[in-house]
Length: 82
Image (cartoon, rainbow, N blue to C red; front, side):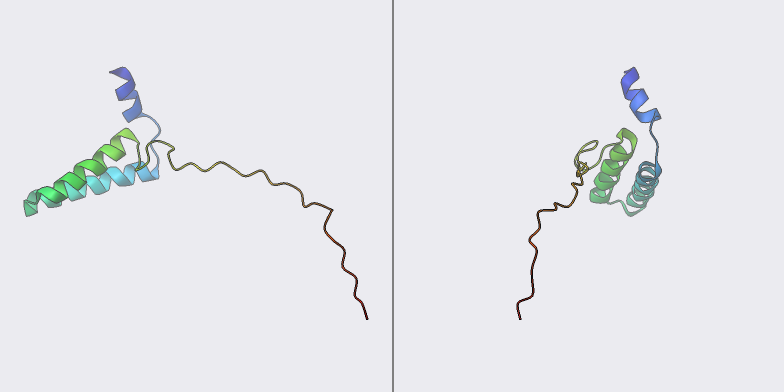
């Protein structure tokens, strides 16, 4: 149980706060409109914000950095023929 609380309490950043704030606004709107579909979306967004997960899971959309190799000096040399 402590790891669950630790996950919620740590590593807050802009997108995480934005997800929680938007989800709360969506949930309030769904309450006033009495719309269950919007409430489901609000709860999903709230879970994403609180648990720090995204559509692909934590770091699921990570792309590794590419190693930049120096340009090869074996490029062909062209000569102008007149």
